[in-house]
Amino acid sequence: MSLGFERTLTPIQPEIVFEVFGFGIANSTLMILLIAVAFLLLGIFVVSKFTLVPGKFQSMIEMVYESIVGLVEQITGNRDHAKKIFPIIATILVYFALANVIAIIPGLTDITYKGVAIFRTPTSDFNTALGVSLASVVVLNAVAFKEYGFLGYLNNFFNIKGVINGFKKGVMDGFVGLIEFFVGLLDIIGELAKVVSLSFRLFGNVYAGQVLAIIIMGAFAYALPAVWTIMSGFTGILQGMVFAALVAVYYTLSLKPVKEITEK
Image (cartoon, rainbow, N blue to C red; front, side):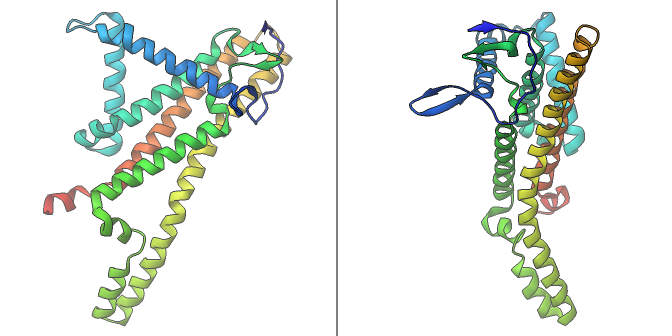
């Protein structure tokens, strides 16, 4: 194991540090485990000791909580919906924020084992971005399934009932129903497009930020690295907020309209 400060271009493919029972453990996976351990220790030794009279750190955590709830409420337009989706959105937002900020720690991503960096920013690994995006879309479809029921959920994609009712009213209404049926089929592609859009947006921005940081560090070894590193971390947090906000928007679209719920 060695500590080095030589900067090389971060490869798109994650690097395998070692293997366990034939399964490769990538450096991005080790960073995820480090973040998970950090959250676990925070919960055990800090959050469990919170009191009714908050201290400085507890006040900061509560302020972050209220800020995220307020953000989600603005997006969903409903306080109850905001509280329901809060655990998901807060987890995504805080995780991405820490995942991008933790790389700012001097020397952390420069620790190597057998010539391979042990830690790598998780969001610069496309597998992480794809996994979180896929999980988010699966959960959103599960929410829609629970809201509309089995037949109602399928009707969002295969609007056969609309076609039948349309032809009962008339030929033109029937053709309109057919158009809506094919538009519903396109919504299936739209669900897959959500996964691609969320993952590529997050991965592309974070990875591009790392590449630019390396280039600038090579060109201006002492003048700009610290400034750009801070800006890169801020951009990572911003991308996490965009990702979480889009998931909240998709969640709102997965729910029944408020007017429809009121009528029932």
